[in-house]
Length: 170
Image 1 (cartoon, rainbow, N blue to C red):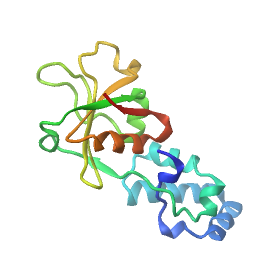
Image 2 (image 1 turned 180 degrees about the vertical axis):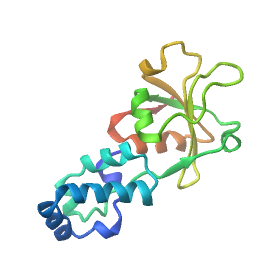
Image 3 (image 1 turned 120 degrees about the vertical axis):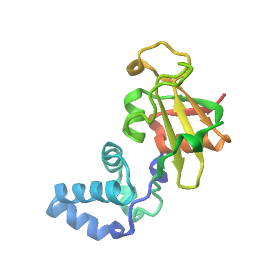
């Protein structure tokens, strides 16, 4: 996700407030940012920390208005039923866990996948990330399949990862 695509709550939109808090107690400000992103936006803590660490003074100067965090929830198996391959994701297992949390599914009945994530974004786009017919150890995989009902699934996955990974249409 590019820096220009994250959202920081309006309560931290005053540049002067942010600068004053940083000079008074930077750890306190950092913790408050993390708490807001984890509790209000339900982001995994590691992802929230990564968002905050990648903030720039440009973000502060723009009052965080141009920052947009991709929000998502775990989709149900029923919501993802009949999705199909839309593209691929070049990312490590650790990076996927950092963004979407631990895998939502472990293995398929036909043994074609061993691990996967089912994601519903805030605009109701549904996407899946999974290994497919791959015997490489999960921790060493770098290419993953992206499933969805439309190519918008690829765009939403890319938005969630920003520059840390690359999603493309097959």
